[in-house]
Length: 358
Image (cartoon, rainbow, N blue to C red):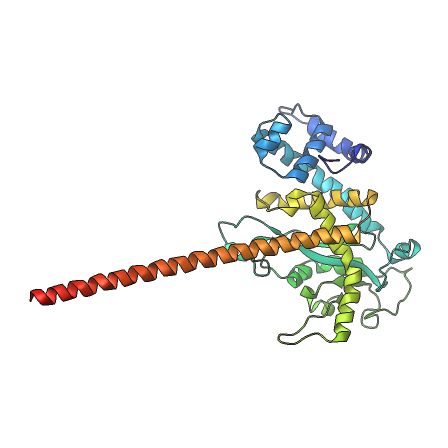
């Protein structure tokens, strides 16, 4: 549990689910074969995702050189990510329906007409050498990636998008995934009619809970949004109550992000690897989090609190970098002013000396 986030029983269940695909992909084909068994490779992948430390340090734990361990990890992610995403994410989406939620009494408390909740998570990353401004998030004051995740009331993720640069707004990311949302929210033939929020405007669709960053999404889907205050004005008491009601249901996404960042350091810390492999790693972590939630349901107090810590830490890091940059610029301007004053003093001295000599 301490090394890979799963106890022995849970690890064995996970191994039984992916033993066939790992064995086939590692043992079949030509070329040199690794001396690492498929089961050991699964364990290595889980440990690297949880720790996300230096390759050489991680390699010393498994008695492997850093580059060798990195190649093994990349190979394991390449095999496991699409398979486990199909097993533990897409499978939950295919089984999701309002009738099943009603049978399990698992609907949202305040908005039972909502099928799932959607939000975007930001992760700090290295500044790209090209198009750096595209990856800069003005909100976090950091360079990084954004990924949209949709979570059902049961606490399981049902969809994960490809990452987008940090400057892209949440609404634009939502619009890019609009085909999925329209298909997922469409009512089935055996679904009952409802009288919930926006049921007249969207009689053939269920609702989705969104953050206030997606203002304007109601023109595309049946979106339940938090109210956003206008510049220089405060929200009314009715709007504050509405936001509290929406947040009490939408907290399921914060809980999931909290569990995701708590389990996997590769998500909760600055992403320092190549951007090309980010989507596979992120999807794998989401799938493994779904598997973990199946044994340990989400907890509002613990998981949401951890996600708040994660967000606050990003804000603190961003502010610290901005303040450091401001201090550097201030020192540069001060040194430049002093140099200019010294230069002007020498110029005036030379002028006075030349006039006296004449």
